[in-house]
Length: 162
Image (cartoon, rainbow, N blue to C red):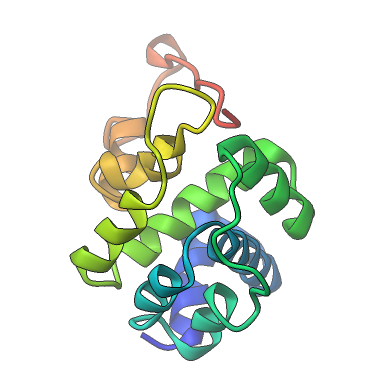
């Protein structure tokens, strides 16, 4: 996949009006993720991504392996992206799902293994919610029930910022 395709898919999935917004979402998520995970893991994950996207995980990161929790991750992504924290959290989930569709499963598992998925404040499981729901297409269908929903059946949305 080339850079334009990656950003185009991300723009479509996030329903953003411009490619610049999609680039900011990808950059914010992957730069922050690159700061959190060990350098070797970042390099492995980046190997299957377009060169420009790969840079966000590796070359743009000055210090890999920093220790911070999910909430700090969301705060950093939000600040870099200049987005509301709830939007930034959702964008990060979609970016990670797109990355999941492009990289070998062993490299993605290495990412998961480097982020604690416990029930406490470290809970990185939230980053993988779309992946765990079967990926973007399946998660979208699960949210909407596969078609238009009447107001009577609308269950409402949970808090996506946590």
